[in-house]
Image (tube, rainbow, N blue to C red; front, top):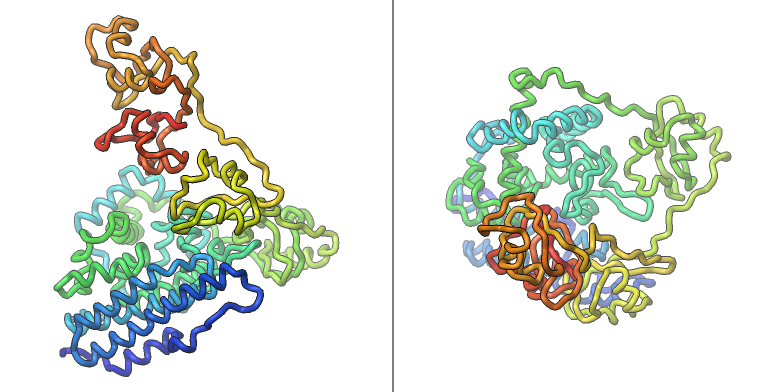
Length: 556
């Protein structure tokens, strides 16, 4: 085999990842853990141990030159750790992440022994202007996202100087300092649908792996300095796996596992050309790399796109003071003579604007550190708001009664907190709000409720006389007669008088839900605890029907 990877290198990768043999893995939780935690750990730990054993089996196949068998063993190992649901088990998260990294490295190393990997300087990020990159350049400079780009570029001045400094220390390309423009538009509180948070958009588990702690008081993902160090560590790890920055960026967006699976389907020198992967990646990831390369090109040619006059925000300046008192930022601001907003901007990781009771390094405006220490006794102790609910993700086989017993609450309380109409209809994977002591139920608010007094309908996109008649329990002929319509043609904005009541022919009243971006009939039905068939029937929808943002649909 044309291969420069030694067996010792593969054997040592276990040590590099911090993974020990199965018998060394902890068998039980520390005293004081809940029975559920102990039971879950006993269930998950063997899965992680078996995944590690499969890695060793893969090593044996690799040494014999049986590459397909080696890859199959790693596939099985990866499937095992994907099935290990440990989102609420911090002690097992690190083991899972280490295994994930080890398996990813092994897959790439074995595949590299079969294909020629490009050699050369991987410190630079080449900017190739192809049709995909050009489309994003146009989008940022003359298209729909021009304002987005200008505003993100302006905000970059607050954080980028520090990011550049840290990248230089780490020996990484300074061009990576523009990655937050694509990730978060340089907004420290940016939150994605996937619960990725902060400048660098870390999800909780990846943030935990790279040292971004999260507790009752702080969320390290929101701190631009801490999250920058975590992002650098993650990017270095990904570059160690792939060795190519464009592929690294794709993996940063959708995960190295997804990229590795696409790579394995290629029978070409994949690291020579990221664009070989382009059309096989998820759409968001496929656009991610061209958007970043377009950003680098625009930044290098600001005058060409008339952006060279756009002002940059000034970097934040501050001094740090270590304190050990639970204080609200508004009280600190009063003592040091600044605004609460300025302290919030300097310390965004404080979740409730309250310092933790333990030692904490607080950022304050220059020259105010001594003032704070001198007036520390004047500042009252503050406590964060008590959480009146917790969240629980439904697992397969769970019922509301099981969940209620676990959290020492009532089934009816859970139903009211989540607007559930039936105690028998919950779906595995759904996130439920579990009320705690002090929780006050608030009836959900809807935009409007139709009653029998509803006598008109405004035509919107997709409407026809037939579906309007079905929706309001009448006939097309009656609507035509009441509105003196000679044909069935309608126009958007037209107001039709209605002879009947809204809703289905059953005569029931229905609330109205306005469709949002990303909605589907299934998600709307699930959100309002309705059977999908029932939702489709009362809205006269079929499997081929399309819904669109702004459309109004009936819900129970």
